[in-house]
Image (cartoon, rainbow, N blue to C red):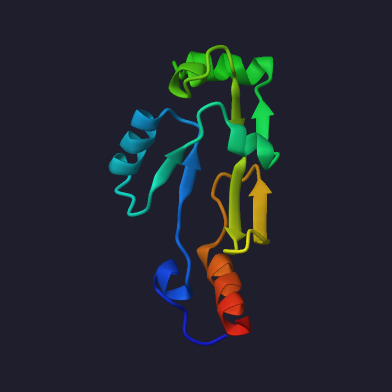
Length: 126
């Protein structure tokens, strides 16, 4: 499909991550991982629920997280709420149209080249 841009901005896009973590924890995650894009907080997981990607922990999963001393409700600023969003990647046009969606339980996320291909097709169509 031709030359691939090295940055999403070259394809007319911005990369943003959304985390259920409290703002301070989202900032720590971004700094710890040297991320070069914004990480927004979705405390209460309203955005995750709107996209239908939030799942509630089973008792076994909650016990496992507690065994690792991972207090998800506290980290997410949602007392008593043992839930997280699935890994999800969306490409949303400036018109609000979802051009690409990839959700699932595979934590490794979407191949960035798949996203760039969608962006290139969008730019070529304009």
